Image 1 (spheres, one colour):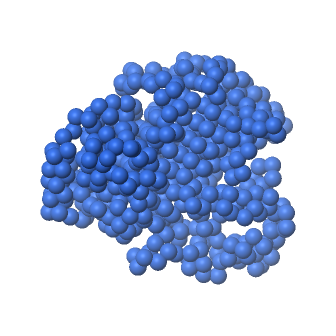
Image 2 (cartoon, one colour):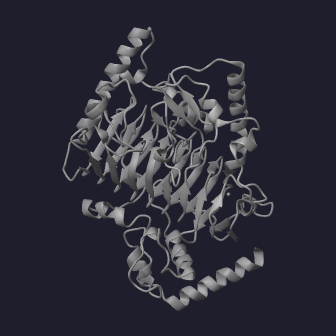
Image 3 (spheres, helix red, strand yellow):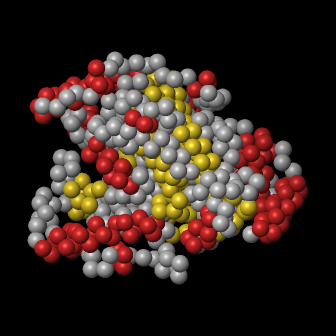
Length: 515
């Protein structure tokens, strides 16, 4: 990640210009901490103190992240371990309590004690790494050191929050669970999303880099024939959250990326979960880009890239690998119950090899969702009938679900009687937006987020800062540098004065418990 040529004062001023333009889409009214107290933080304690805002947590505030901040760090700067959080626990001892192939738990007193210590450690880690973001807050990065790690950013029961210009690494669960009965060959289940938007309104996540970071799946040992998965989601939007925009971000190297709605039974989500996802890049993210229940979600001008052969993050589908719709395949856009998803001008890219070729069913997969339309997207540079792909997936899921319920003597969910439709909601009834062409979408991989890509011009020119919106370059060109420096100096002076179900419920049980 590069940032060396950017003048700090210039960056803040241009960021202020961009923030003033505001987000596009459902989150259009989000203003964050505009006009509030400014904080410059370099530690986890300073971040939490800034969110408290001197006892006025709900009042506007802008928090600049100037250094890497680790959520596992205590107030003395020590990074807490699993053994310190739950004395007597050992992850190796937990692994030793399964048979060699991981198919069975050794039900001994010693093993049950280890598992009890694991269960006791989980809420202690949660209390340590979960940080609540208070209302009317902007959290903004200032450079390549603006990184949040081992932290779960909880935008929970809040409103009017902006997260911008940050590198966010998914936290690692110190107490993951191996479940031999989950899936075909068992699965690792972990807690803690990098960012959770829960029961909150007016949220904008913009120009960030979200990934598994230094501890990717393929850095863990293969145990029970699988890498140990220590992560949950990167950005989950759940529990009636509403009016959210996710823009100009890069999601990379992750499995369960973005869940919108976390339970088929949570019918209180109806009328909520309105989300716009645009101008983002998804690279080697296995699934949930996003996976939607109930919400009206607009996905436009995004670049997607996955591989069948990636060692840590292989994307495998029903058509090219599983040949079985009862499993959990990988996919890009997931359609859950009562979802309403419009896709426009996205570039879906999927690379395969001779052993496992690419397959177009990666693009859209139905978990009972039947309302979807695509306008002008491409798959590997070609036009496809994406609506037909979605309809085919839905009909297959209906057939599979009805067969499963017949064998189990269960009642079919109502969506099995639905008819697929491409009549989605119309975003322009709610907000204005402009589509860019596919060539520009393909170039997002070289531009998003803007702070990762160094421009050739000297730092004294405003064009050294790459834009995050279509017209940003023109806006920056009109900024006089002397005015910028004076504005930044004024801001710094003021800051000195005043120095946060039914369809595959087993798939999402971890999401529900962590959210």
